[in-house]
Length: 188
Image (cartoon, rainbow, N blue to C red; front, side, top):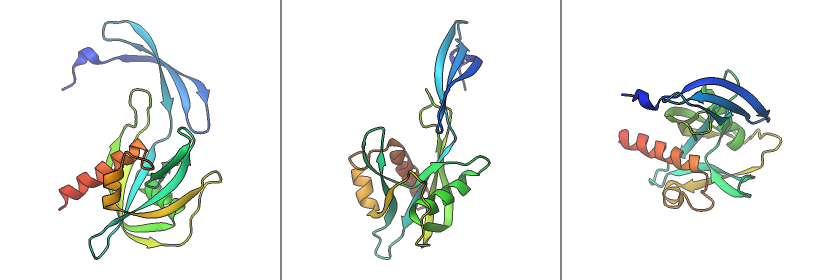
């Protein structure tokens, strides 16, 4: 049950800065004790992250991951494929598209893992996690013009042991891994 004493009333939202990736909005909100305050929010499209699983007959399953440069921290990051949803695109469609674009793989099975708010204190968008199985290699990627990635097969055990250490530094990948582990535990 929501405690109404913590609920703020948004009064006005104004875009104050725009980029090709996000907009910054200034938000005027009224506090539970009727005081007006100004906050800022990043408005961006929703994202998808897909955890592609390659099942091995010997039980040594692997994740299909992409290594890429991240400008915010100026270092390489090893991640599950993903990206921004296009306008009007359903999350599952975006997940399949992003996986194909970045890795050249398609999936015969894909299911929803979770949907989270990446940082609800300052961001308005959501991130949708999917798990993909029964992968097929098309041998053809379709990267964005400013996207440079290498595709790697990494044992699931290695990712579980090293998540949170370089090059497994992206916090949303830890959340995606948790969604995978949670779904796997529920289905075994």
